[in-house]
Image 1: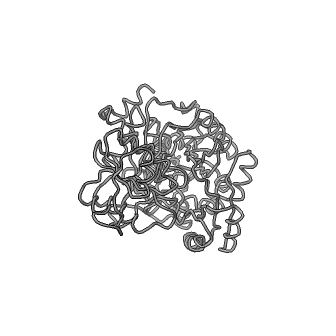
Image 2: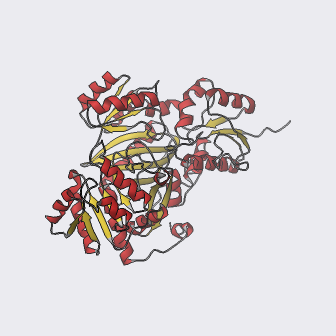
Image 3: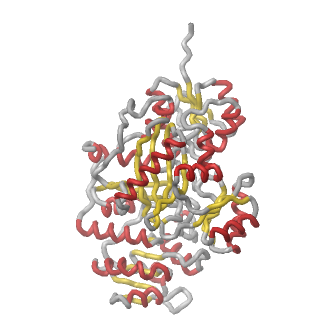
Length: 520
């Protein structure tokens, strides 16, 4: 009797674009390697020639085909696998998982019903109520009129976004009915057959990402990452710190409890990503994704465990205990994930971050302290922080009080401070020596002249409102063009000052990942 080897189909992420992390390709490759270790043939379905998953030696067989229901069903009909993996390719495979399941395909890992409970807004709200977890006020709409009604009930500002889209496409923070009109039209174009999701925007909240792995019974948290930028910036663009550097222990304990409860209720088998927001001691659940997230490669490198591999074996029926994963990993170092942006390739583009993802990659800085780890992450992302020179500060009114402490630290470290008139007045009231610089429409030399002449070595500029002024856009695009380090959030500025201060005390050193992990 001829022995027939077991096969598993892995659905990749499909065509790549700005806003779709290539990190999902890492997970697909890890799944293929895990299947080989288990003695199972891996069959990759993907159509992006720029990925490692489509290399000839990554899997046993590659189908370079579109990720559509029809194409995948044809492949399954030919290959007759024991099941398919949909949770490693990002949103693209998830969008067709229900149709494949209804066609009789065996979906390995978390069930399509559980995935839908997390994706479907009404079912998700019911889920959170059952677990007594807190969610920001929200609603769904299928028309502009319905969206306006919900937004006014919730109260502006709100986040409006289509469901089932990649990289926060067409997602925006809107502040009034006029802005909602324009963004609703974009959202409907991005996802015409799906409802529009409307959430109360939590201002001044700390966002937290949690990655976990579960085997259907037990759940272990892989990593808790604190965002450096406040809530409102896409998680794919925000810098993150592992372990959290400012959250109280009580908040971390409650985040863990919430994660365990959600994993158990959804019967997660494989990877799970949850996004939380912490505001005034309240933990809000923003999103629950029973799939791989774009932070999985970062967490795996930071704590030395191939989580996508572990998740694949859990999907095949292995228990976490059997795989040697009994408890959370504790690390004695600090890892910072920073995003890499393509702004230099698009002259004139504004470098402001928001809910729609703009990054094209990411880097990691790792060291014994947050300041040094953040400094390494900036260096890896192409942003060389100065140790002396001139700093230009121009911030919106809401940030003038917050920027005072940052400016004082820079002044104490020997930097010369430059500011536009409004920011300069706020800083002068706090006994800081400031040189006032002219705006573009005022006398010369103005801000852009100083940047072009090499007299500015760091810029801290936060945007004023949704509609960005032309002057600000020119300042930021000129900074990118002339390779001047640019910071566009107060939280980012605080981290930057922390890094510069750490560099002034200690030179950067290099250690391998193996050295960091050997004493884990």
